[in-house]
Image 1 (cartoon, rainbow, N blue to C red):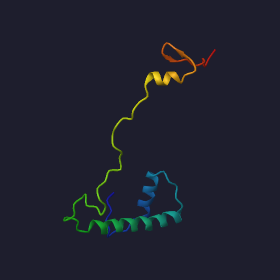
Image 2: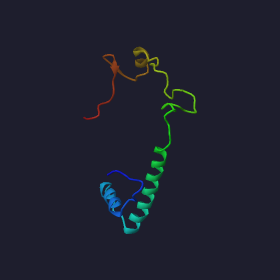
Image 3: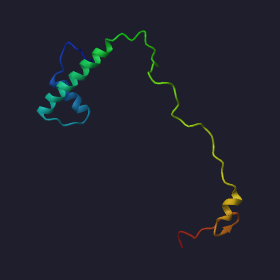
Image 4: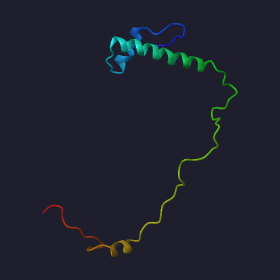
Length: 101
């Protein structure tokens, strides 16, 4: 379905969209959403009419900055240092009580 800004949305189109979205709408809701959808589509058509040919797709009023942290690995613990904190050690590993008898 293509939207033609010169032809208003019909109730049937709104009901079809509602079925696709698995929505049950009352008659009043169909009328309300028809008007709202039409308003949104009209606004999108106005935006499409704006000449943006001289504007770079990455143009921004904000400076470039990365929101990601620097990649790196933190210092890890030494095995012997960790085993010193264990209450029991067996064959170079932590010894824990069995979960099942």
